[in-house]
Image (tube, rainbow, N blue to C red):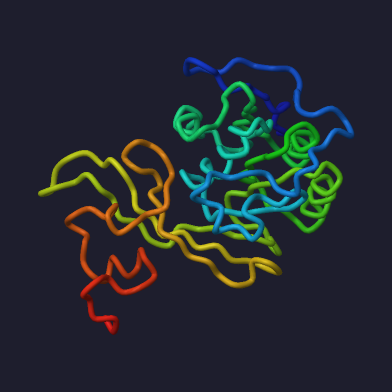
Length: 251
């Protein structure tokens, strides 16, 4: 049995619970920004070849999580219309703390069997669409959506695999802060993020970020940010990219 029409919702500005909208109220047909890339949060700029999300392109993250929402939040805070498709558990309120504007965010929790058509429609009206494909993205589907991207100069952020993607980002290591003596509350996550891909992104770039920091923000990690229990010379070298003061560089 085919699934019914996908429900498009607008994220709430002040409360949980979602109210339906009947259209994608993004830029008018033919209206595109002159900027070459959508902005991202400052802490993420060095991970991307152009310091932002290149218009007309696909960017992938290994999985849906804080990193994906952080990439969405930068453009949203700058005024871009955004959409999230295929992620029913999307934490809009958490993303709002990073700068995402709920009033300019559309949700399609279940795009159904016709998800390529739904995503194409979203790309026609939104500058940035975060998609977790509910089915296989065949070559034909990818070509169609990438053609829409080039025409509308939007960005498709895919949570999961996308063959031939120009830029890929993934978290390769995590260290949580807040637990002590086997108890406490997780308050922040120190994460190693790697970006690679093709062309401009062929050379891998790695950065340590607070994803998020204790105040909920996304920031570049410094040695002083590392919790006391994790301040070994090896940790400092990993975060700084060089030897810690007084440490043996050979490890």
